[in-house]
Image (cartoon, rainbow, N blue to C red; front, top):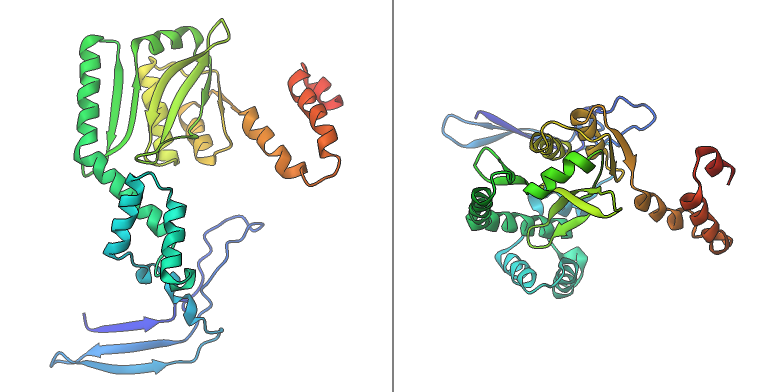
Amino acid sequence: MRNVTFECSRGGKAKVKTTNPVKPQPQTKIECPSRLNFAICPDGKWRLNRVALEQNHEYSPGKSKFYKSNRVLDEHVKRKLILNDKAGIPLYKTYDSLQIQAGGHDNLEYNQKDCRHHLHTERHKLLVEGDAEVMHSYFMKMKADNSDFFFAMDLDDKGRLRNIFWADARSRAACKEFGDVVTFDTTYLVNKYDMPFAPFVGVNHHGQSILLGCGLISHEDTKSFSWLFKTWMTCMWGCAPKAIITDQCMAMKNAIEDVFSNTRQRWCIWHILKKVPEKLGKYDAYKSISPCLQSVVYDSLTKDEFEDA
């Protein structure tokens, strides 16, 4: 290292990362000229070469606490977060107590997202230390009892568990008969690790829900969903469903297009109807038309009948 330059966070030119001109992303870079330049002398001392303090925007020193480098969780806070989590106290209640203890939100050197991230990291450490091995041993025992039992575990570069999938013999047999339409949902959470539980569910000839496989994923992103769908395909002898019912998750949509290229994706009606009160609830006539809307959705047998109603 020979020299170092400290510049304003709003210095430099903005880089446009979106190709959609209708939805431009907000930019913070406005070529602010404020900067300090230092050089190292042969005797090892620092020399200040340049000072430019003029800025082309309003000052906001109070926002410095929002920078990641300035957000710090001390050991007392970390210990309190872990103990309260073990006691079953929700994170938002712990965070509220920390705000009161500090004399207000402005006096905290961290936010609720930092606390959640710390708990997430600690839970995954627990998973690495023992639970992954226990789970693998259990799956191996199930495999020994029934050769048709299937499981797969996805590990990262450091050998830590990321995603899991398993299906027993009954689920695999049921998929041959009733796997043409599958529902896939990740709204269930395993509380201890915050890992979404992802079941594949079908419907048999009695109209009953049947389990066609289960998964635990570390992140709800396209990469994790793609791994889960490819593993499910391997388990089910490469047979993709004709239709899959999901929520309106873009990462899930991308994974389905990648893995189930010939499968028609449909949105879950529960997720659609959940938005009706949000969109129409403020209108006076909502209560009177709500039963009519339910009838239109559930009792229409054709597209034309639905549109007319």
